[in-house]
Amino acid sequence: MKPNDPSNITSLFSLLRERRIISVSGESSTGKTTLALQLIASALSCEDDTDEHCVWIQASEQFPKKRLHTFFKSSPGKFNVLLKKIFLYPVTSPFLSYEDQSAFLTTLRSAILPFNTKFLVIDNISHHLRLAASCCSNFKQKTALLDEFFSSQLFPLIMRCLREEIVLILIHEVSFSPALGKNQPFFNKLYSRINSVNVCLSKPFNSKTKRMELLSRNKQITSELKYKILDRGISLV
Image (cartoon, rainbow, N blue to C red; front, side, top):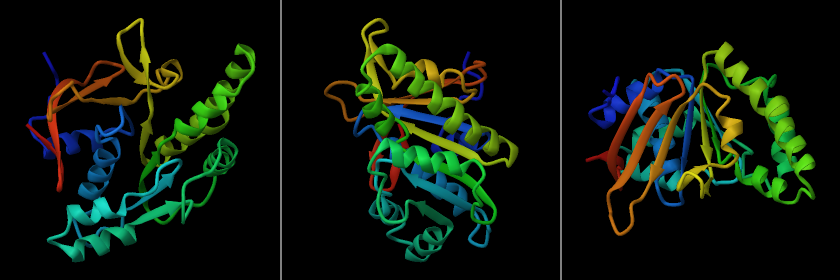
């Protein structure tokens, strides 16, 4: 039994937009950023005159402007409208260090956002944290770093998004878990505290078709889907 099992890409995006926190993880080239971008584009282009906006945080990855243009290469007008609805932070390039990212996320919990911000994307929230954790000299120092990240940066941001009804999309790096025999978001125990919809992307060996797993902590959503990445974005198969 798979409740709320989406049958196509439109119903998948409708389902995800109903959730407040979406966690997207997967290996390189599985389409994490593409999925988030396609979800945002779908939501903001439903009505050309909508005044809803998205804040896209370039934590460690440059905003994929060329990919967005490819989505709408037959409708350049929609592409230009969408660009005006997406606000980038930092404006020019991703953060250079965990310290830069940490300072920004700490202020974000109370900073003034663009009018009617309904979506907030962080791509990739794990990269700088992972590097900083790898530099910790002992387990106690690493635990303190991760706890500080959750309590001072992530949790206040989550509470703000819930309070202001903003959809928060977190894009993660993954690590292989020998015990489970599969990939998991970096420091999975930290993110398991969050009541989110987890979208896990993977690419079976020697196959052009990839796999998407959807799972919520309360098991209201469980689904396994197959997809391909095309010029127009992710397409379910």
